[in-house]
Image (cartoon, rainbow, N blue to C red; front, top):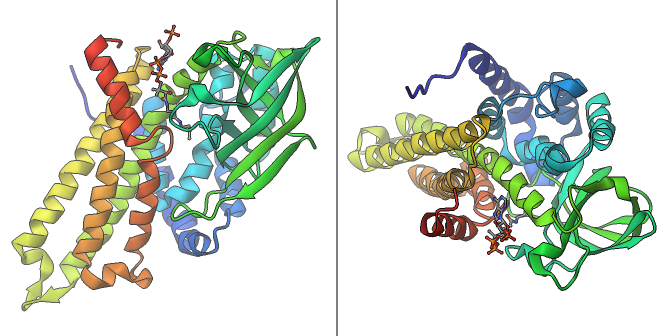
Length: 381
Ligand code: COS
């Protein structure tokens, strides 16, 4: 049987996240968007009431939410503001390599740190010259005795300017392509520098920075998984986090739709609310269908994980469709507002700027199509 009804527990978490989004996120979202600042008070409250680090295993004192419940939560937080949502959820991405491949000792160190008080761990994969083509990264990790010495720069790092731990992917064999990549947990010290904070088009409340590792030494126990096995740790991480990106895209689309619907019922043209015109009804109907389909694909991507099944294909379907749909829905939400939609005072334009990032991070829409094409042609799933 296929049941699309969330459980009572999932509904309770959804309600809690929506309330947090309405009361704590929405009132400050536009001012942080304009200023390009991280709302640390919001993160502190989210941390206190258990809306962050929900993936930490129970055996280490965490909530260990299942993936389906987590995506339900992530959609609601992104409905409030996806910039704030990106930073609030980012510990999930930053620590997934540790969850997948870290020893108990290393896991305990990180989970204790993240759960004790508000703190951030960032995911360091992308480099200036290695975005979609992960295997071409140049950052190196050289084994010296029982340590690795890391050198290189990582860019577009969410929460990079605030993180005190990083999961870093580096070449332990420069000539071996994807088979020469290793993953490490790195604690920030003074060899780790924050070089640049990006001034982004959207999701401006989320910090994005370039981080450089200058002869950074890490003990060999912080190697995550096998030496030269890091590429699969990175791909396994993205399999687990892409449903969350799809959920956030759905949240952005839902937020823009809600604003467009309210405006269409209120705005009068030709003597009636514009919602009475079929031109607007068809726009709203298509937006609603895209949101519904995005949500169902997202839930499927998460449910596969909960069932212990490989979800590369379904999570790429979800991420590709939901992020492209968010772009379309937010563009149409601006269209429903007519000229007012283009004016910042009407607020809806923020969703359009925010949605664009969803088609770019954690693998562009084109990379998702590559994964889908490879999977359907070679039958990898
Ligand atoms: N889980 C486990 N292993 C995986 C995997 C997955 N989801 N996807 C690929 N692999 C394995 C393959 O099985 C292959 O293993 P072998 O070495 O044993 O043959 C290896 O990884 C290489 O796979 P593939 O040939 O598919 O790699 P490509 O370089 O062709 O493609 C893409 C990899 C482009 C899909 C990958 O680089 C990617 O996802 N890029 C985007 C990265 C991204 O999302 N960046 C954003 C950073 S976070 S903001």
